[in-house]
Structure formats: C-alpha cells, structure tokens
Amino acid sequence: QVQLVESGGGLVQPGGSLRLSCAASGSIFSINAMGWYRQAPGKQRELVARISGGRTNYADSVKGRFTISRDIAKNTVYLQMNSLKPEDTAVYYCNAAARTWDKGLDDYWGQGTQVTVSS
Image 1: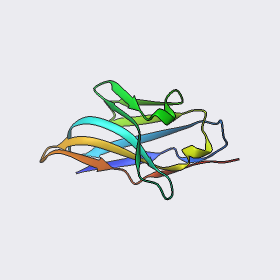
Image 2 (image 1 turned 60 degrees about the vertical axis):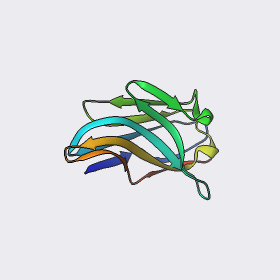
Image 3 (image 1 turned 90 degrees about the vertical axis):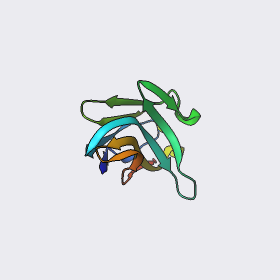
Image 4 (image 1 turned 180 degrees about the vertical axis):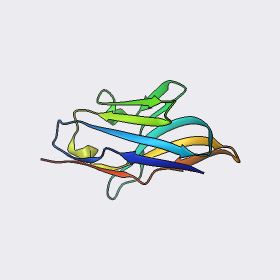
C-alpha cells in the first residue's frame, strides 16, 4: 500500500504564491509518475500538472504560473504556484502511479489540501 500526504495549502490573495508538497510512503517498489489534480465545487476533478521520467505536462490554465518538480530520493512531489487567481481555488489532490512489492502498477491518491485564492 502507498500513502500520500499533502501539505502547503491555505488562503492566499490573488497574485500570491503557494507551494504544495506531497510525500509518498509505504511498500513502494517504484513510482512511474506523480502529479497534482484539483477539484473545484460543482466541477470535475482535472489534471493540473504531472511529472514522469523528467517530463512534465501542465493544464493550459496553469502554464507559465505553476511548476511541478520531484525529489526522487524522498518520493516527494512539489507544486510551486505563482500568480494565483481566484479560479485556482479548489481542493488539490496528489496522485502517484506506483508499484508496490506485492502489487502491480496502480493509482494512489492523497486526501486533498484546500487552496483558496481570495482578497
């Protein structure tokens, strides 16, 4: 089993910055990819950013403002969010595509962290 623990959410004014962190732990054999998704009230969960093998991809709405990075040794992924807008307000979820010692590739999710952008 893999556990993902997120941190770094909160309330920030428009134009401000936040940095989210997500640490993976458990019986991890390997992690293929890690990413961040978000879900705003009344909307479907959407991909924000993903990193795999050094390659990154971003939602069009966050390109140029958000940066995803990963510390492989620590099994941790980060999301640096700059120039935040009210429409970035959502619950942000960490995701990992990982293999454990007793299971094949599977998706794992964190519990979510609230990001609120408001003046």
